[in-house]
Image (cartoon, rainbow, N blue to C red; front, top):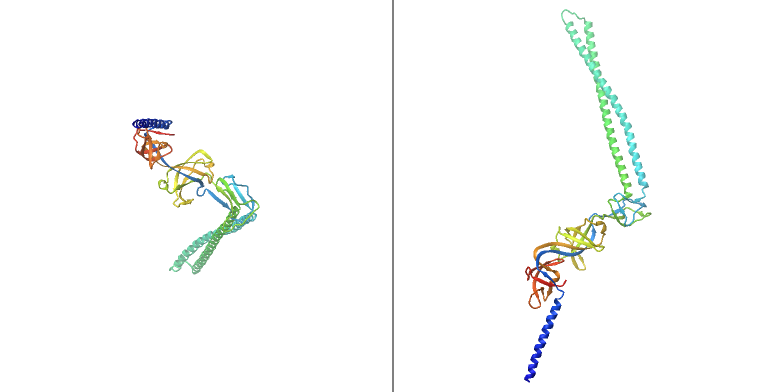
Length: 414
């Protein structure tokens, strides 16, 4: 019995040794192929990944419509065509509108000719009356001189006639007086003629000024009517307001469009150089995102093309997709816009912040076990795993806040 117990004891020892050897071998087998990484200090770039889509910027895509009713007689564009600013989009039958322009131009020409003749006649009349008035001034001056002389002569004659020596006869005295009276009448007539000439000249000048004013008003009105006729005519010819690509066409040649409260839509034009990247950010991440942050992104059509931009603004109103709340961050795109098309899906990486001078290890070295983050530390007892406290991580590295020190070596699989 004792011998049996002894044999059993030896068997247990041998089996334990074999188990330990196999376990160690298994551990060595597990450690085979593991890479080593010496814990060091470095930088970790915190990023947020989100999807988005290419959208037109405000005013980058417009609907071009007609403001007149008529038949579309020419429309040389189709979806996908590229147009330059001023290129022809469509022409609506505008024969009546052209006739309105011709009539307005004829009316303006008639007014100019009509008033030019009247004004020329009035100017000639003013010139004639000016000469008559100038002549009347000379006559008044001459009559005034004659009156002054006759007055002096009469006063001299009167003095001599009334003197005691009677050197002047009564006949001469009366003749001098009659000459003075006649000179006074001539002066009065000259003055009346001058006043009449002045009034006629003033009336002619007023009439000329009034005629010029009427011409200005009628010409202004005619020019306004011509401008309106030309504007109405321009409504029948649709041209591209800016360079871009045609994204939508709703009418064809031969169709009749009716202008009402809403202008009939002909085409949509997109300025491809003015597109935006709308990033849909989950509500759990929006608190870390702000305007000014750098964004790198790509699209499925060009996976090797890396695009960059900055967040210009974040819309305050959320959008809900599949019961998930998102907020839109808008990134203005300034490069490779010709390769981007509306509704393209974008894959975005928002660069939130950079943490420097921190302990880092490869991402694959960090595992989550039993509710804790752990790394496999070279030389550690047991299975080699030690608990760590992690921080920020990026594509390559994870920040280690606690649990390791600089120079430690961790084991990991790539």
